[in-house]
Length: 198
Image (cartoon, rainbow, N blue to C red; front, side):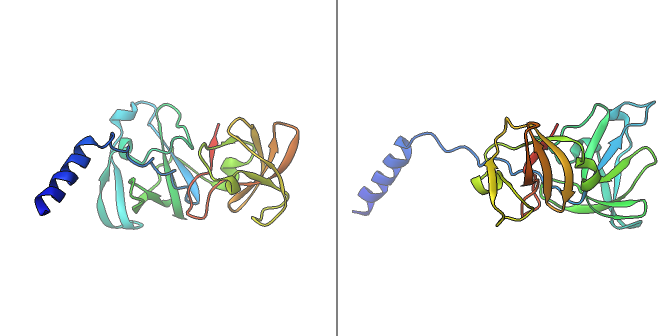
């Protein structure tokens, strides 16, 4: 009886359809701002020195990181040539705490003079954004105020061009296709992007 059960299980496994694909990669974390790590003009991106990572600003060095190994922020953000982007979670003077791997681990780095940090409020203001694909219905609703319980004005989609007018926390006031305006979230409760920046 036990052999028959095992034989049936093996037969079912052998005849099962193709294995399901891996779950989609999660949307990137947004943090509090973005650090643009620019290459030194005289050098190529590959020639950059490694990034030095610390537990605290200037204390407890934990290692080095090649800028090429920073987490990819696509589809939310695209990086210019000879530059790298890092999500910043905190800033103290010339030191920034960045997310340095796909697991969301963080470390401190000292900013070089040719790098640029921008909090999301100033980075997003005036930019064109689009909703990311595959979001739940409640996340793509244009609302009359920056509140999940505010009346909805319309459902947005990936084709809508959204020009950011104002940023309030995780919400942006947008001009939709130059015809309508309202509020939509640009990051979710987990701190992950809901929009892509053009």
